[in-house]
Image (cartoon, rainbow over the protein chains, first blue to last red):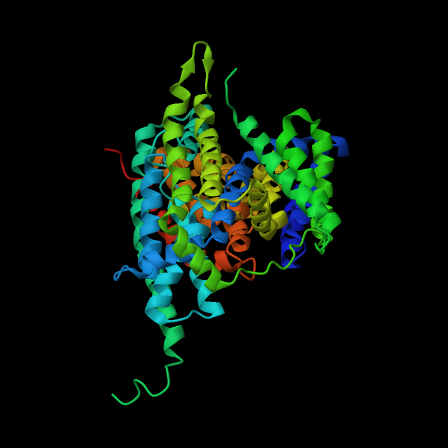
Length: 232
Length: 322
C-alpha cells in the first residue's frame, strides 16, 4: 500500500492546484525512494526517461516558428477569408470533417496534423470564421467553447482509429504483450475489433459538434439587434 | 550508421530553443528574464545533447526546470497582438501563398515517411525505417520554415521571435509529457501497477463475467487517468484482471479484449491532465483560460465512447468465435 503514496501525492497536488510539473516530478522521486532506490538512482532514472521521451517535443518546437512567422502576415485572416466564401461551412461541420479525415488518415498510418500544425493555424481560424459569419461576433465563452472542441476533434480523430492499420504503436503493443504472455492472438482479429469504435466516434462527434453549434446559435440569439425580429 | 536520425533533428530542436533562450536573455523588457532564459537554456541543452549527458545530470537539470516553473519564473510576458486591420491588409497581399508552407509540412512528413528509409547511398542508408516518420516530419517543418521566410521576406530572427512567442505561451507544460513518462517509468519499476490491479481484483466480484469486463475497462480508464498513458496501463490491467478473469476464468477472446481494452484506456486519456501533450498543451496553444477547458469538452466524448466499448466487449468477448 505504501507504494501508492506517489499517486496520492499527484491527486493531492492536482486538487490543491500546485504546479503540475513540480508535483509530477516530486511524485516520481517519492515513489522511487519508497521503492528502495537511492536519490542518485532516482535522478538517473528521471534523466534517462526524460531524454528517451524528448521526441514528443519535435513537432511542437519545429512547427511553431513556421506558424508564428505566417501568423504575423495574416495566416489566420486568410484562412478565415477563404472559409467565409463557402456557403455551407459551419463550425460544427468543419470540426466533424477534420475529425473524420484525421481518423481516416490515421487508419492507414498517416499522421496529417496535430495541435501546433493544424488546429491553431488552420482549423480554429476556419471554424471561427464560419461561426462568425453565421452568428456574428463570438463572445469569450463561445470562443473558448469552440476552440476546446477544435482541440477535441484532433484528439478524438487521432486516438480511436490507430489500432486498425498494421505497424502502428497501439497494435504492436497489444500484439507484443500477448506474444510475451504466451497467449495466441491473430493481429487481424485485433484490427477487426477496433472497427466498431472507429465508426462510433464519428456518430459521437456529430452529436457533440451539433450541440456546440446549437450553443453558438443560442449565445448570439440572446442579444438580438435592436428594432428587428420582434414583431413577426 | 545512417545519414539522418531523430537525434540529429532533435539537435536542431535544441538549437531553436537555444536561440529563443538567447533572445529572452537579451530582452531587457522581459518580466521574467533570468528565470525564463535559464528554463529555455537548460531545455535547449537537454533536448539537443541529451544522449551525451550523464542521465543523473539530466535528472537534476529537470528538477531545476520544475523549481523554476513552480516559482512562476517562466510565465510569458504579455504579448500585444498585431492590429487586425494591418493583418488583414498583409493577408490580402500574400493571399493563398500564406497557406503553402503550412500544407507542405504534412505533405513532406507523409511522403518522406514512406520513401526516405528506402533510399540508400551504397552502404549508407538515409534513415532507419522506424525513425523515418519523425525525421520526415522534422524535415517537413524545416522546409516549411524556409518557405515561410521566403514568402514573407522575413529573417530567421523573426522565426525565433515568433516561435519563441508561441513556445512561451505553452511554457513549462511543454516538458510535462516527458516528466510524466519519467513518473510512469519509475512507478512501473516500483511495481505500483501490479499493486493497483491486485487491489481492484480483491475489491470487486470479478468472478462474474460482466463485472470482469466492467472492472477491466474501468481499470484501463482509471489507470490511464492516473498515468496519462494507455500504453502503460495496458500490460498492468491485462495481467492483473484481463487475462486471469476474462480469458482464463471465463474463456473470453483475448483479441476482442485487447482491442477494446486499449480503446477504453484512450477514454481515460481524453479526461486526464496527465496526458499533457493532448489536453494541456493545446489549452496554452489556443490561448484558453483554465487548464481543464479541453478536458471538459472531451468528457462527453469519453463517457459515450467508454460505454460503447464496454457494451461491445461484453457482447462479443464471450461469444464463440467464427
